[in-house]
Image 1: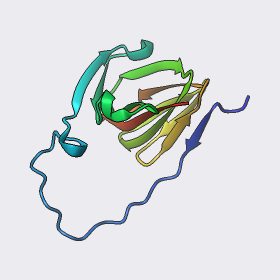
Image 2: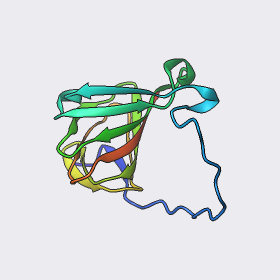
Image 3: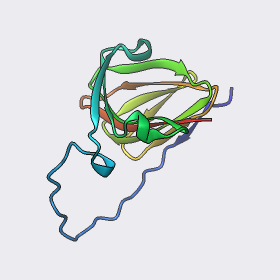
Length: 143
């Protein structure tokens, strides 16, 4: 059976910026001074434990083509249960930790730098398979 999600196992290599960076005083702020909001969901999509979502943009800033843009944190043992996307696609970009990504029943290990894309009508789930928090960016785009 063919995979229903696109999986990019490569690592994105970042150039180290050797210039000194200015300290940002307002760490809890998003673009144009908007505050980020934190949400905790228990047993998300039938998964285990709590999922912490830090919404980068509020609904009014997402526009008509985006439903979610958030930093997601799963503590060890926590997961987002398998679910399908109708009329939308979801992309994950992994920042830290180790996870087990369910791509229509095919399990794949994910690490920092990996990217997944679950298209319209496709399904996925994710669990923290490591001993540290699994952190990733999630973006849901509407068709």
